[in-house]
Every structure is written in structure tokens, then in C-alpha cells.
Image 1 (cartoon, rainbow, N blue to C red):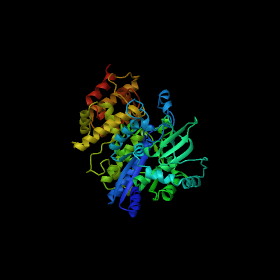
Image 2 (cartoon, one colour):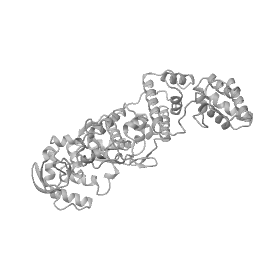
Image 3 (cartoon, helix red, strand yellow):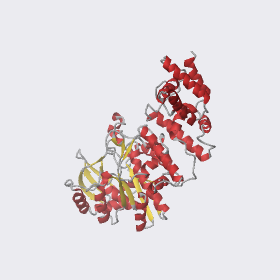
Image 4 (cartoon, rainbow, N blue to C red):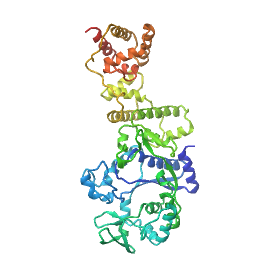
Length: 510
């Protein structure tokens, strides 16, 4: 049974209706690694609803959190003064809107593209609107107990005079001041300059520390399930303290949960937007089909890390997905893989079988043809497709755009090529001239389709006792100006036969 269905069954044992939560602090570009959390949550939502329950997905934008430092992608001179201020109160890097929305808006657009439609919770506004007030009051009435829980569970000593609130200084910076007095809804503290400042807790002047903020969200939103990263799941970590806080102070059970592993960028380690070591979700969608991105998360168990290679590995991932799609419609896919395929569909439904085009062939065509109609005509001529319906056209156009984006940003050089308009120079000795003539004569005599072209080079090998790779090399050199290229049979079939024969003749009849 697929892991999402296992979780859904456990949730449905406790009730029919569920609130499934995910979230992020929008401190920088929201990357593919962060997508694992919300895609995991979305899979559980879909499974609960598929099994007759009623689940909704809430996405919490933790924009009340402060800017921790000036990250590498920010202007140090511009942002130094904003360090420590809530993300919702900081200007965006482009000078328009707020810092948090600058990163959230493209991420939410990416979520739409992969078929995720959450209810968005603006955490900063929740504090401003007083929606945390009941939880804040409960915690303030149980300060001694809260302190005991945090110290006992985490094994760390809190400072003397600790107060369960992150204060807001008169310059807007969130800080740890010296507690002076408290009477709901006001708390007074002394800042680092010795000045007494009063915050109104009911108006969101400051916020709860993370280990108290998280269980408060569970209570306020009625969260029954959450997926979170392994950093929160360590012994004595924020989940361990959170479940004690919600049970013993907020009088509610902690949500069911699942812990997920990181997505590592091949050769670099775990993605982190704060260090710039990441591929943003919107960038990813410019170079990979959305159903493939979903499948990358749906196929493995959440506790397995994913090594993501945006280069040739991405091409291999699309090929694997396409093979699974083919096996699914032939009813040959293994049970877990079949369910992963179903959960990978953007529209949350499996369509009738569609024509599956070899993705590597599209990579070749996108570089050898400029217009969509040219690509279609070539695919029909080479026997790759028949007439396409509206959905198939939409999918093909989307994949072509993804390939173009991939070629611009992440494709390895050995995959990229350009057909040379002017015949490249060739070191033409008698042996090479004979091979050129043999190829030309063979091209004249064969049917112009990928299989016939491919087989013809091995016929030349057998007839002339010359390795086929020597003929391949010559063809790549005279067409592309380099010794390697795409699969030759299909590649040559995408071009006109007369063009190939003319190019061969250029070297034989100077």
C-alpha cells in the first residue's frame, strides 16, 4: 500500500474530517526541497478524500518571523537595517510589495501549476487580528509549566527571567529583552539600550517563540496531520516540546505526523534558500513537467532522501516517469508505483491513455526545429505520433517549453547541439572520403525513417569491416561540428533526406 494511503487510513480511524497543514518561512526563494513538505501533505489530502473522508490543506506563511541575516542574494547595504524585523514589514528586493509576498507569490503560482490549492494562512495577520489570543493567554497563565516542559524535554536551560514572548523593540526589530511586567494584554520589557518598551500581545506586537508558536497553530487551525522535516523530529526537538505544550497547556491532542527527508542537490548537499544552494520551485517548473515533479515526491517513501540532479538526471527522471505511465496503462505497474502515478496527476484524475512521445526525441527536435508545427510535422513523418487531441497538444507544448528552459539553464553540454548552416571544416583524407562516399550511397538507397537510418550504419560496419562508431563520428562532424550528438537514426530522420545527401556531397565534390 502506498505511504499516503497508509497515513489516510490511520487518520480516518480517528475521524472523517481533517485539517492537514504545511508551511514555510518565506525568507528567500522557496525551493524544490520545500516542495516536498507540501506535496507530501497534498498526497495525504487526496488520499483521505479518495477514501471518503473530508480533508483540507492549509498552508501557513510564517511571515511574522524575522529576517535572520542579510542572505547572499540580498543587497547588504539595503537590508542590513531590516535584520530582525518581521518579513511582512520589510520591502521586497524589487521595491514593490512586501518581502514575504515577493517570494510567496511565485511559489503559490508554482503550487497551482502542480495542482495544489491550499487555504493560505497569513501568520503575521493572524497575530494582528488576535487569532492567537486564546493560546497566548493560556501560555501566559502557565508560564511555569511552559518553562518546565521546554527545559525538561529539550534538555536546555532557559535564561533566568525568561518570558514566553519574542518582544518587539521600538525600531520594529524582534528581540530578547529583559522582562519587567505583564498584565494582559500588555508586557513591558527593557531593551538593550535600557529603555522600557511595552508590547500589546493582542495586536501582534511581537510573537510567540517557535516552540510555542507551532503548537498554537495546531490548536487555532484544528490541525490533525502535518508533515515536517527531520530537523523538527530530533529527540527533544520542537515536535517533542510541541506535543507536550498542546496536551498540557492548550488542552488538545497533537496532530498525526510524518517525517520527511531532505532533497539533496547532486554534488552539493541539502537545498537551503538562505545559502543560495537551491533551485526555486518556479525555476524547476520552467524545466520539468509538473507531473514529473509530483512523481519525484510521490514515488519514494518520505523518510528516504532524494538526490536530485538537474542535469542529465532530470532527463532520466522524465524517462522513468514516462515508462511508468506506459506500464500503468498496460496494467503492468507495481501497486505502489501505480498509486504514485495516480497521485502525480496534476488534475487529480487519471485521463484516458495518451500518446507518449520519447522525451529525448523532443530534446533533439527542440534544438533542430524552431516552430511547433515543424516539430509536429516531423513527429508525424517519423511515425512518433498520430493526430493529437487538445490535451495532448497542451501537454506537448508544455514539455517543449520545459525542454527549452532546461537547455538554457541546466542541460549538460554533451546534450546540447546546433546544426551548422555552413559545412564545418573536415580533415579529409582518402579513408574519410571513402567512408563519406559509402554513407552517401547508403543514404540514397534506404527508406527515410529512424530505424532504417540506424540500421544502415551497422550494415556499413558489416560490409566494410569498419566500426559503426567511425561513421557516426563523421556524420556528427559534418552536421554539428563535433564528434558526438543525439541518437543518430532519429536525428537524421528529423531532417530532409536531400539536405543530408547534399551535405555529404559537399565534401566529395568541392
